[in-house]
Image (tube, rainbow, N blue to C red; front, side):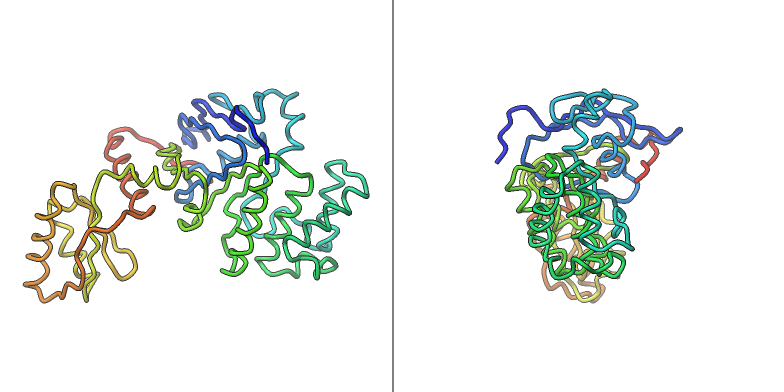
Length: 330
Protein backbone atom coordinates (compact mmCIF):
# COMPACT_ATOMS: atom_id res chain seq x y z
CA UNK A 1 0.00 0.00 0.00
CA UNK A 2 1.35 3.43 -0.97
CA UNK A 3 1.65 5.93 1.89
CA UNK A 4 2.04 9.60 1.13
CA UNK A 5 1.54 12.72 3.25
CA UNK A 6 1.08 15.22 0.43
CA UNK A 7 -2.03 14.95 -1.76
CA UNK A 8 -1.59 12.99 -4.97
CA UNK A 9 -3.83 15.55 -6.67
CA UNK A 10 -4.30 19.17 -5.57
CA UNK A 11 -6.47 21.75 -7.34
CA UNK A 12 -6.59 25.43 -6.42
CA UNK A 13 -9.11 27.85 -7.99
CA UNK A 14 -9.23 25.85 -11.21
CA UNK A 15 -11.40 27.33 -13.93
CA UNK A 16 -12.16 26.49 -17.55
CA UNK A 17 -14.20 28.21 -20.25
CA UNK A 18 -15.34 27.25 -23.73
CA UNK A 19 -15.86 30.67 -25.24
CA UNK A 20 -18.48 32.36 -23.06
CA UNK A 21 -19.53 29.09 -21.43
CA UNK A 22 -18.17 28.37 -17.96
CA UNK A 23 -17.23 24.70 -17.67
CA UNK A 24 -15.40 24.81 -14.32
CA UNK A 25 -15.49 27.62 -11.79
CA UNK A 26 -13.04 27.91 -8.90
CA UNK A 27 -12.52 24.22 -8.12
CA UNK A 28 -10.50 23.48 -4.94
CA UNK A 29 -9.66 19.87 -4.19
CA UNK A 30 -7.06 17.80 -2.30
CA UNK A 31 -6.99 14.01 -2.77
CA UNK A 32 -4.56 11.75 -0.83
CA UNK A 33 -3.14 8.54 -2.24
CA UNK A 34 -5.18 5.37 -2.29
CA UNK A 35 -8.59 7.08 -2.34
CA UNK A 36 -11.51 6.65 -4.70
CA UNK A 37 -13.40 9.85 -5.45
CA UNK A 38 -16.76 9.54 -7.17
CA UNK A 39 -18.04 12.60 -9.02
CA UNK A 40 -21.74 12.90 -9.69
CA UNK A 41 -23.86 15.45 -11.48
CA UNK A 42 -26.02 15.72 -14.59
CA UNK A 43 -24.55 15.72 -18.09
CA UNK A 44 -22.77 18.96 -18.92
CA UNK A 45 -21.63 19.95 -15.42
CA UNK A 46 -17.90 19.60 -16.18
CA UNK A 47 -16.92 16.10 -15.01
CA UNK A 48 -15.10 15.15 -18.21
CA UNK A 49 -13.52 18.60 -18.43
CA UNK A 50 -12.18 18.23 -14.90
CA UNK A 51 -10.73 14.79 -15.63
CA UNK A 52 -9.03 15.93 -18.83
CA UNK A 53 -7.38 18.85 -17.01
CA UNK A 54 -6.05 16.77 -14.12
CA UNK A 55 -4.87 14.02 -16.46
CA UNK A 56 -2.83 16.57 -18.43
CA UNK A 57 -4.88 16.13 -21.58
CA UNK A 58 -6.06 19.77 -21.66
CA UNK A 59 -4.21 23.02 -21.03
CA UNK A 60 -4.86 24.70 -17.67
CA UNK A 61 -6.58 28.05 -18.26
CA UNK A 62 -7.03 29.29 -14.71
CA UNK A 63 -5.84 28.16 -11.31
CA UNK A 64 -3.21 25.61 -10.37
CA UNK A 65 -3.16 21.80 -10.60
CA UNK A 66 -0.57 19.59 -8.93
CA UNK A 67 -0.42 15.90 -9.79
CA UNK A 68 2.06 13.52 -8.14
CA UNK A 69 4.07 16.35 -6.63
CA UNK A 70 4.38 18.81 -9.51
CA UNK A 71 2.60 21.34 -11.68
CA UNK A 72 0.68 19.54 -14.45
CA UNK A 73 0.97 22.70 -16.57
CA UNK A 74 4.76 22.29 -16.62
CA UNK A 75 5.68 20.35 -19.77
CA UNK A 76 8.63 18.56 -18.18
CA UNK A 77 6.62 17.40 -15.20
CA UNK A 78 3.74 16.36 -17.45
CA UNK A 79 6.07 14.16 -19.51
CA UNK A 80 7.49 12.59 -16.37
CA UNK A 81 4.13 11.79 -14.72
CA UNK A 82 2.01 10.81 -17.72
CA UNK A 83 3.34 7.22 -17.62
CA UNK A 84 1.96 7.05 -14.06
CA UNK A 85 -1.50 8.27 -15.06
CA UNK A 86 -4.22 6.23 -16.80
CA UNK A 87 -7.37 7.58 -18.40
CA UNK A 88 -10.36 5.54 -19.55
CA UNK A 89 -12.72 7.75 -21.58
CA UNK A 90 -16.50 7.73 -21.51
CA UNK A 91 -18.20 5.23 -23.84
CA UNK A 92 -18.00 1.47 -24.29
CA UNK A 93 -14.62 0.49 -25.69
CA UNK A 94 -13.55 4.03 -26.63
CA UNK A 95 -9.88 3.23 -26.02
CA UNK A 96 -9.95 -0.12 -27.89
CA UNK A 97 -9.06 -1.32 -31.38
CA UNK A 98 -11.97 -3.54 -32.31
CA UNK A 99 -10.17 -5.57 -34.99
CA UNK A 100 -7.40 -6.56 -32.57
CA UNK A 101 -7.79 -9.43 -30.12
CA UNK A 102 -8.09 -8.97 -26.37
CA UNK A 103 -4.44 -9.93 -25.95
CA UNK A 104 -3.21 -7.69 -28.77
CA UNK A 105 -5.10 -4.67 -27.43
CA UNK A 106 -3.44 -4.94 -24.02
CA UNK A 107 -0.09 -5.76 -25.61
CA UNK A 108 -0.34 -2.67 -27.82
CA UNK A 109 -0.77 -0.38 -24.84
CA UNK A 110 2.10 -2.10 -23.05
CA UNK A 111 4.34 -1.36 -26.04
CA UNK A 112 3.24 2.29 -25.98
CA UNK A 113 4.52 2.57 -22.43
CA UNK A 114 7.84 0.95 -23.32
CA UNK A 115 7.37 -2.32 -21.48
CA UNK A 116 9.63 -5.16 -22.48
CA UNK A 117 8.24 -8.49 -23.80
CA UNK A 118 8.55 -10.39 -20.54
CA UNK A 119 7.07 -7.59 -18.46
CA UNK A 120 4.14 -7.26 -20.90
CA UNK A 121 3.50 -10.99 -20.87
CA UNK A 122 3.50 -11.15 -17.07
CA UNK A 123 1.27 -8.09 -16.67
CA UNK A 124 -1.21 -9.23 -19.33
CA UNK A 125 -1.54 -12.64 -17.65
CA UNK A 126 -2.30 -10.93 -14.33
CA UNK A 127 -4.87 -8.56 -15.83
CA UNK A 128 -6.83 -11.09 -17.90
CA UNK A 129 -6.99 -13.42 -14.93
CA UNK A 130 -8.23 -10.65 -12.63
CA UNK A 131 -10.83 -9.44 -15.12
CA UNK A 132 -12.06 -12.86 -16.22
CA UNK A 133 -10.89 -12.25 -19.78
CA UNK A 134 -8.43 -15.16 -19.83
CA UNK A 135 -10.76 -17.48 -21.85
CA UNK A 136 -11.26 -14.73 -24.46
CA UNK A 137 -7.71 -13.52 -25.15
CA UNK A 138 -7.96 -14.44 -28.85
CA UNK A 139 -11.40 -12.89 -29.41
CA UNK A 140 -11.54 -9.59 -31.36
CA UNK A 141 -12.48 -6.68 -29.11
CA UNK A 142 -15.37 -5.79 -31.40
CA UNK A 143 -17.07 -9.11 -30.60
CA UNK A 144 -17.07 -8.62 -26.84
CA UNK A 145 -20.13 -7.71 -24.77
CA UNK A 146 -20.39 -4.24 -23.28
CA UNK A 147 -19.20 -5.37 -19.87
CA UNK A 148 -16.26 -7.26 -21.33
CA UNK A 149 -15.30 -4.23 -23.43
CA UNK A 150 -15.13 -2.16 -20.25
CA UNK A 151 -12.99 -4.78 -18.52
CA UNK A 152 -10.67 -4.83 -21.51
CA UNK A 153 -10.54 -1.03 -21.55
CA UNK A 154 -9.62 -1.05 -17.88
CA UNK A 155 -6.91 -3.66 -18.51
CA UNK A 156 -5.42 -1.49 -21.26
CA UNK A 157 -5.46 1.51 -18.91
CA UNK A 158 -3.76 -0.46 -16.13
CA UNK A 159 -1.09 -2.28 -18.15
CA UNK A 160 1.61 0.17 -17.00
CA UNK A 161 0.62 0.06 -13.29
CA UNK A 162 -0.45 3.72 -12.92
CA UNK A 163 -0.59 5.66 -9.67
CA UNK A 164 -3.68 7.68 -10.67
CA UNK A 165 -6.61 6.30 -12.65
CA UNK A 166 -9.39 8.35 -14.28
CA UNK A 167 -12.60 6.52 -15.21
CA UNK A 168 -15.28 8.54 -16.99
CA UNK A 169 -18.66 6.83 -16.39
CA UNK A 170 -17.12 3.36 -16.83
CA UNK A 171 -20.27 1.34 -16.07
CA UNK A 172 -22.80 3.19 -18.25
CA UNK A 173 -24.54 0.66 -20.50
CA UNK A 174 -23.09 -2.29 -18.60
CA UNK A 175 -25.26 -5.12 -17.22
CA UNK A 176 -25.61 -5.50 -13.40
CA UNK A 177 -23.35 -8.57 -13.16
CA UNK A 178 -20.57 -6.84 -15.10
CA UNK A 179 -21.01 -3.73 -12.96
CA UNK A 180 -20.46 -5.86 -9.85
CA UNK A 181 -17.38 -7.51 -11.35
CA UNK A 182 -16.03 -4.13 -12.43
CA UNK A 183 -16.32 -2.79 -8.89
CA UNK A 184 -14.55 -5.79 -7.46
CA UNK A 185 -11.65 -4.93 -9.76
CA UNK A 186 -11.64 -1.31 -8.60
CA UNK A 187 -11.46 -2.39 -4.96
CA UNK A 188 -8.53 -4.64 -5.82
CA UNK A 189 -6.59 -1.77 -7.40
CA UNK A 190 -7.57 0.57 -4.58
CA UNK A 191 -5.95 -1.83 -2.11
CA UNK A 192 -2.78 -1.63 -4.20
CA UNK A 193 -2.66 2.14 -3.54
CA UNK A 194 -4.03 3.40 -6.86
CA UNK A 195 -5.86 6.72 -6.56
CA UNK A 196 -9.10 6.55 -8.56
CA UNK A 197 -11.17 9.39 -9.98
CA UNK A 198 -14.56 8.10 -11.09
CA UNK A 199 -17.56 9.82 -12.63
CA UNK A 200 -20.82 7.94 -12.49
CA UNK A 201 -24.51 8.32 -13.20
CA UNK A 202 -25.34 5.77 -10.50
CA UNK A 203 -25.75 7.16 -6.98
CA UNK A 204 -25.30 3.72 -5.41
CA UNK A 205 -21.85 3.58 -7.03
CA UNK A 206 -20.92 7.01 -5.70
CA UNK A 207 -21.74 5.86 -2.16
CA UNK A 208 -19.14 3.09 -2.48
CA UNK A 209 -16.37 5.67 -2.93
CA UNK A 210 -14.18 7.05 -0.14
CA UNK A 211 -15.25 10.54 -1.14
CA UNK A 212 -18.08 12.00 -3.17
CA UNK A 213 -17.79 15.13 -5.31
CA UNK A 214 -21.04 16.91 -6.21
CA UNK A 215 -20.70 19.02 -9.35
CA UNK A 216 -23.27 21.48 -10.62
CA UNK A 217 -22.81 24.13 -13.31
CA UNK A 218 -19.04 23.82 -13.09
CA UNK A 219 -18.90 24.31 -9.32
CA UNK A 220 -17.90 21.72 -6.75
CA UNK A 221 -20.74 21.90 -4.21
CA UNK A 222 -19.19 19.36 -1.83
CA UNK A 223 -16.43 16.76 -1.66
CA UNK A 224 -16.15 14.55 1.41
CA UNK A 225 -17.00 11.08 2.70
CA UNK A 226 -20.55 9.90 1.90
CA UNK A 227 -21.57 10.20 5.57
CA UNK A 228 -20.21 13.73 5.96
CA UNK A 229 -21.68 14.87 2.68
CA UNK A 230 -25.14 13.63 3.65
CA UNK A 231 -24.77 15.23 7.08
CA UNK A 232 -24.67 18.63 5.37
CA UNK A 233 -28.39 18.41 4.66
CA UNK A 234 -30.06 20.71 7.17
CA UNK A 235 -33.61 19.93 6.06
CA UNK A 236 -35.81 16.95 6.99
CA UNK A 237 -37.09 14.47 4.42
CA UNK A 238 -40.62 13.16 4.92
CA UNK A 239 -41.34 9.99 2.99
CA UNK A 240 -44.89 9.80 1.70
CA UNK A 241 -46.45 6.66 0.29
CA UNK A 242 -50.00 6.88 -0.97
CA UNK A 243 -52.23 5.26 -3.57
CA UNK A 244 -51.98 8.04 -6.20
CA UNK A 245 -48.48 9.51 -6.08
CA UNK A 246 -48.71 11.73 -9.18
CA UNK A 247 -51.95 13.33 -8.03
CA UNK A 248 -50.54 13.75 -4.52
CA UNK A 249 -47.50 15.56 -5.89
CA UNK A 250 -49.62 18.08 -7.75
CA UNK A 251 -51.85 18.69 -4.73
CA UNK A 252 -48.89 19.17 -2.38
CA UNK A 253 -46.75 21.47 -4.53
CA UNK A 254 -48.59 24.66 -3.45
CA UNK A 255 -48.12 23.98 0.29
CA UNK A 256 -45.83 26.73 1.67
CA UNK A 257 -44.35 24.47 4.37
CA UNK A 258 -42.89 22.13 1.74
CA UNK A 259 -39.64 23.38 0.26
CA UNK A 260 -39.75 20.70 -2.42
CA UNK A 261 -41.84 17.71 -3.50
CA UNK A 262 -39.82 15.04 -5.29
CA UNK A 263 -41.30 11.92 -6.87
CA UNK A 264 -38.95 8.96 -6.29
CA UNK A 265 -40.27 5.73 -7.75
CA UNK A 266 -43.61 4.99 -6.11
CA UNK A 267 -43.16 7.44 -3.24
CA UNK A 268 -42.71 11.15 -2.59
CA UNK A 269 -39.93 12.86 -0.69
CA UNK A 270 -41.19 16.03 0.97
CA UNK A 271 -38.50 18.52 1.98
CA UNK A 272 -39.28 20.58 5.07
CA UNK A 273 -37.42 22.62 7.64
CA UNK A 274 -36.67 20.60 10.78
CA UNK A 275 -38.80 22.93 12.91
CA UNK A 276 -41.83 22.48 10.65
CA UNK A 277 -42.07 18.67 10.53
CA UNK A 278 -45.16 18.26 12.71
CA UNK A 279 -46.98 21.15 11.03
CA UNK A 280 -46.05 19.83 7.60
CA UNK A 281 -47.39 16.36 8.41
CA UNK A 282 -50.74 17.88 9.46
CA UNK A 283 -50.87 20.06 6.34
CA UNK A 284 -50.17 17.06 4.08
CA UNK A 285 -52.94 15.01 5.67
CA UNK A 286 -55.36 17.94 5.50
CA UNK A 287 -54.60 18.36 1.81
CA UNK A 288 -54.73 14.71 0.70
CA UNK A 289 -57.26 12.88 2.88
CA UNK A 290 -60.32 15.04 2.01
CA UNK A 291 -59.50 14.36 -1.66
CA UNK A 292 -59.74 10.60 -1.05
CA UNK A 293 -56.02 9.85 -1.26
CA UNK A 294 -55.05 7.04 1.12
CA UNK A 295 -51.80 7.74 3.00
CA UNK A 296 -49.92 4.51 3.65
CA UNK A 297 -46.85 6.10 5.23
CA UNK A 298 -45.86 9.63 6.21
CA UNK A 299 -42.72 9.81 8.35
CA UNK A 300 -39.18 11.22 8.41
CA UNK A 301 -36.51 9.13 6.70
CA UNK A 302 -32.70 9.30 6.54
CA UNK A 303 -31.64 11.46 3.59
CA UNK A 304 -30.32 9.72 0.52
CA UNK A 305 -27.52 11.01 -1.67
CA UNK A 306 -30.18 11.95 -4.20
CA UNK A 307 -32.00 14.03 -1.56
CA UNK A 308 -28.79 15.84 -0.71
CA UNK A 309 -27.82 16.53 -4.30
CA UNK A 310 -31.26 17.91 -5.16
CA UNK A 311 -31.17 20.10 -2.02
CA UNK A 312 -27.71 21.44 -2.85
CA UNK A 313 -28.66 22.20 -6.45
CA UNK A 314 -31.80 23.95 -5.21
CA UNK A 315 -29.75 26.03 -2.76
CA UNK A 316 -27.14 26.81 -5.40
CA UNK A 317 -29.78 28.02 -7.84
CA UNK A 318 -31.38 30.21 -5.19
CA UNK A 319 -28.05 31.74 -4.22
CA UNK A 320 -27.08 32.49 -7.81
CA UNK A 321 -30.47 33.21 -9.34
CA UNK A 322 -29.34 36.65 -10.47
CA UNK A 323 -25.94 35.50 -11.77
CA UNK A 324 -25.91 34.02 -15.32
CA UNK A 325 -23.80 30.89 -15.40
CA UNK A 326 -23.43 28.48 -18.33
CA UNK A 327 -23.17 24.71 -18.09
CA UNK A 328 -19.93 22.93 -18.81
CA UNK A 329 -18.96 20.61 -21.61
CA UNK A 330 -19.08 17.00 -20.50
